[in-house]
Figure 1 (cartoon, rainbow, N blue to C red):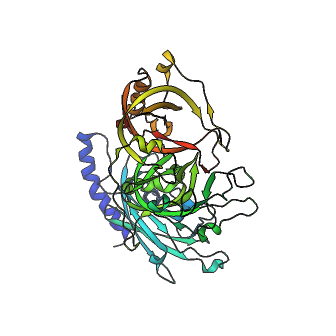
Figure 2 (figure 1 turned 30 degrees about the horizontal axis):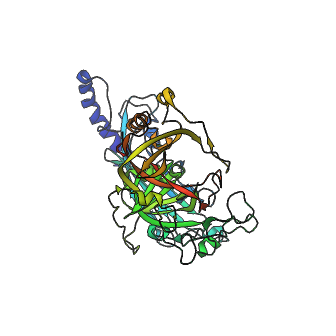
Figure 3 (figure 1 turned 90 degrees about the vertical axis):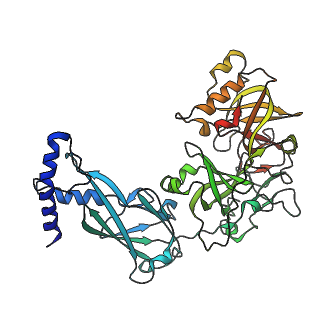
Length: 478
């Protein structure tokens, strides 16, 4: 008996039981029954399978591949094409029909010439999807006929009846080299210069034509991967870097996160632009991962920006992630030591520590394009009742021992309507009398001296200070 005949018999048998149930149960939902019924008009079965397979292979999680044709993966033009999201199961319906169906889909990967596994770097399983990351892209200049072509057979099953769809993914030329840096290496001191070992004073800050005294950034000579991206005309380059650890925090809007290994942490900037995290974050959070992105500075603070990939740390990588160290309280000696090459506490996560509130509350506006940050007039008196940490960035002063330093708030972290506790705690704090004892924790960031460089030029300046950024409600005990 063919599949269509089997499907018709299944439907006829199920129709009797469904009709009986409807006498007492009201609305019908076909999730565990037959996928069609004998009363369906011609064409509904085809629509069911069409909708079941629709979008099941999504390049970059958004562009649906088409069965029985070739679809290009072209990360040179869009880095999200380095991965494909495969739906393993879903519930769906047909327009204008009340019935609902469930489909499960299994995938087989093969090639006419070669082993498909040689081009698959990682697979990440979520509740209902599998995200596949690819590798061994062809080099520029490769003849199109020789691009790797990965055949994907998708076998979908609805209530015991199956159909197949066949896809072909074509890997286009792509070359990107990364300097490999452990987080401990990121913060290692240079052997002979007052900076970190991957930096030098020949870095040309954003919008500058030449190096600036006491401004440091990635050294083009540090690694061949960076030399490959050097643009002599623009006097700039992209410092691509690969590191590993665990993603221990991501802001509600994905603007920033924290990668941690042992006692070392680094900010992941603009994680929201990495489309793969939306598909894999539920699985990879707090797991051992490799992170590939760009090493840079944001207002002086060290960060990985514009992430290309976050994938599981493979067993053959040869490295082991040191579990994140529990946060400890910070000290006056840490905060007061602003020689960051000798005291590289960039992004360190610290536990709530007793400090004295000093007031001096301001709204600050970080500008794009390297323009100078604007600092509004101090907010005092009853106006402090109207502070809005959910939508604006603020600074205020606290003191530990005899050292005064800034606390900066980040609305990307705070604007979480489901969890207003952090915003509420901060509002309570800034409305306390100056001199009040409070507790504050969070992540430590470096801030370049604004009198030396007003905006973000991607350098880390010798002149500046450490500031504290709370990112959890428990970091503020007012």
